[in-house]
Length: 318
Image (tube, rainbow, N blue to C red):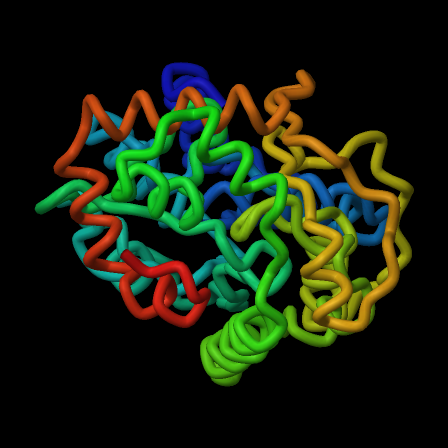
């Protein structure tokens, strides 16, 4: 959502509720990263939810601007149900942490929590990297996500042809893949344990169809969270079928050797990256990432340091 559009909509909602024109519907705010908007869409597919509630769209926490803080809090002051991920205080230097925003809730408001859906068990080489001192991760070119294999190649000063030949012959180490999967599952289970909704049962049920990237779950997973929210509200979990995937702007392939290591069947996913609807083959990604690391050696150095243990476990550490 464009921040200016969100600001205009927030002001309109705040004014409407301030004037008492609430009708019979209760106001819902869903606070979190990009997954929050996907959850809003999914909840709105439930007739029982639409009948009783209206969920106002708000930008994700990594996009919100300072000029939007006041209208956001005006809406929060009139909120009946606050659905939120755990967001740490003072993210990006602004008071947008879960506790900081919840401070403005009216006493009647109910809070429902859901986890940040981050799972790299199907994409064991996909990582995020932070520039030194940066609060948010630094996006890689084309794919946004960094690849441990390409970081290794850049550290070895391989050219694109050498790197691609190595990738073409590379097969995931089974022990590494299983360790990443089990570790990621345990981390997510620990993260969701104190929360009101769970994600890991859905991952076990849907396998490789669960995530497009390490933090972009499919509708199968978001829909599972929505069903739990509906149950918490005492509503029917019946939902209209979604017309599109909500978080598929970036789709990473799940390597066949990863599925084999996890003893999972091929689910017919994409064989190449799909970036905002366009197919992008691996040679292009390889060339683009290597050139970018040459231009941004400090990012490469930061990523290598952060993920040294993972690269060692994958058996291609520098």
